[in-house]
Image (cartoon, rainbow, N blue to C red):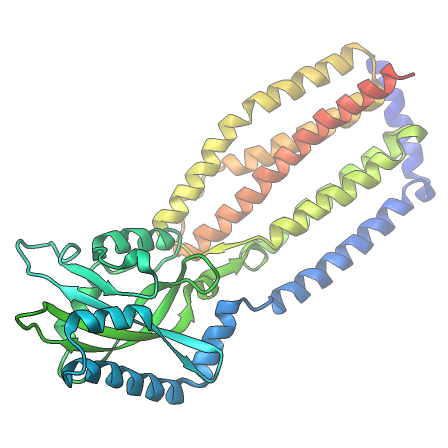
Length: 397
């Protein structure tokens, strides 16, 4: 068997001296790299705007005119109650049914009314506030605690955090007349809750015999934390490691090209294309900037994942041993080489780095490990698929 392996390597060396046998792979690789660079650069500079992005851009461009308009509308709503035209309950119903105002035809903004109860014990600021009027009926008569719990889940992976005392600050900082406060919140424009920064204009309604202290507010979305915190992997990963993996795809493709029989001529091209598609997909993936603790959790998840690969490694060890015993020389060399490279990648991931100075350094190292870990899995899966394909092909002969 080992004489056959030696003979195969001699044949490979002869093929390497003949560029025509593998020139097509190199040409394809160069074309793929050029396409990758053009596509990545174009994509990150031409990210399509979401509805929320367009909405916020409109708000910021028209902020002065818009804020003046909303303050006038807020004043009108308050006067409906203070002038005696409406009783308190009637006023609440009116604000729930007519919660929105429109600015420049197609941009709407919504009022909400919140009531404050009595503090019975320290730290119950989440329980003493109740939504009395809102654009979404399911939140009417719901406590701030329930709404906060729901909204706070959207801030798990961003470095900002939702303040549980937001409504308390509304009341504590409120003075007679129109007030303004800026705070973190969530937007429902795209059908789901997106973390944002809002500017809110509000008026405090003093408590009377008929009602608790309340406030009516209308807000302007000024910044999307999703867009502000989102980053693409390609901008936060070490370039030299991307080049190493790209080079590995070429190296393995050349090995497959010169070691495959004529009937398997397409395997090397397929491998080169599929692995580089995955590499491009990974580089264009995105996520939120997180806290140090978030990064530590993600690093630990990758480290834990190394143990889960043990089964796949065991399967591939069996495959390679079987190929060696069955004298499948070409397939053995291919599988053993690819499997060895995958193990080297896993060992690289297992290296411990603790001299981080900034969160950004931690992020770069984590993304590099994540890419190497995922690519190692891709290589292991290829060994299994290539073996299965060969077995099926042989059984059909």
